Image 1 (spheres, rainbow, N blue to C red):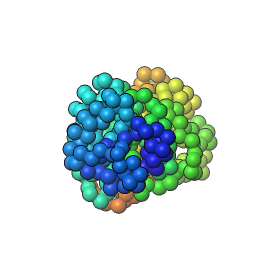
Image 2 (spheres, rainbow, N blue to C red; image 1 turned 90 degrees about the vertical axis):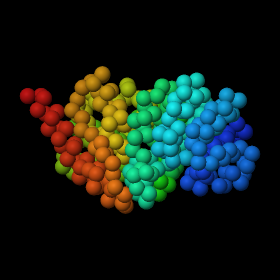
Image 3 (cartoon, one colour; image 1 turned 90 degrees about the horizontal axis):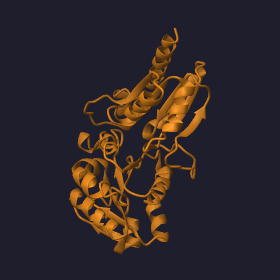
Image 4 (cartoon, rainbow, N blue to C red; image 1 turned 60 degrees about the vertical axis):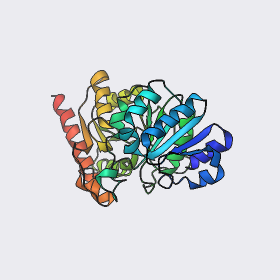
Length: 308
């Protein structure tokens, strides 16, 4: 909530709407500073969405903040009809996105469908910052983006990926490494550290890697992604999300429409996961560093076979 504090200091239109999620959002300091800018609706996410819509109609900038799945599933109709359809200036922050973030509560608090759901709804911008400082910057950036914005957040215990104050630039891919063009690795969120490790292993094997963070899942940087696909000719996508509907689907759609290349997807393979420690969960569900390396090698083999 550091980003929200920064915004509130400069703009008295900033509001926080919670659904019995104040502690989960770690927003108690915000409420102490700005008690008149906090609306608590209790365990009633649909009402929180409708309340946020009403605040936006009056010219305020509400941040509707709670668990990712309770925003995108329980309040989906309200978001679609009362926020997205009229294109209202509502910002949504969802925590526990992915299976690694909900390791303590299990599948009821592991939200791996959220991006897929919101990608199908018009007018919504989707941001997936990689760590705490990037989340702070994404929150600030969201306030300046017209219309609905969804910020997908993890558990608050996610690994640090970037140095503090590294730029967060919405709508553009972030090329983190370019050590060759044998394979492109696209990813975001909690899997970025694993992509970095996989890139190092592949480079040590003599495989040239272009590592790309896609923190804006919607709207996609079609031009930037297509340029990378043309340069590398093969790709791997990695996300803590169902492989159906998320980043992998988005990249494959982009490739199919602009520059078809072999693509392998890393993510939850259309199943309900168990609970467990974050790293163990990701490994068990085939999102390990080794899985990424194998996927890259497979994509390169496919690419080379099409040249014959």
